[in-house]
Image (cartoon, rainbow, N blue to C red):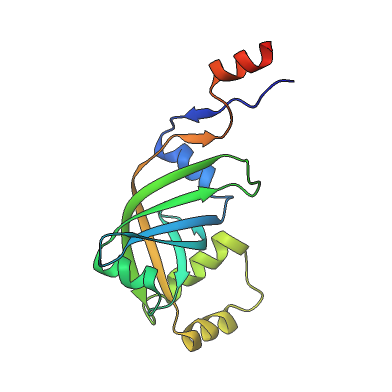
Length: 159
């Protein structure tokens, strides 16, 4: 039986962003005050400026941590557990209401498409006092898939 072979494909920024755009399941890593990582499962997207955008609240650890230390990482996962992924490192900018309003509209569009009532959406974001985390990519890993190293798969297939 043929084994899945792990892949690792180095891509330029434009291809990395094209890979991330349709994928909205992410793990956001920020740094706690004690230096250890804070991992948060989030939904995210890519805005027109090529930044990863994530909706949050001012009191959440991820928001407070990114305000204190803007160096963040995002692991972007495929919908399938064994699908491809990429880690994106970058610098976060945090926007709170009312400055976050237009960015939250962009966030919604890139994650879910058009809203049936933008005025209602903006009102809800204001009522919820939402924040927006915008991460400008500074480096990224190769786009990878899991599996066996090719030499190990060959040995196993030969058995």
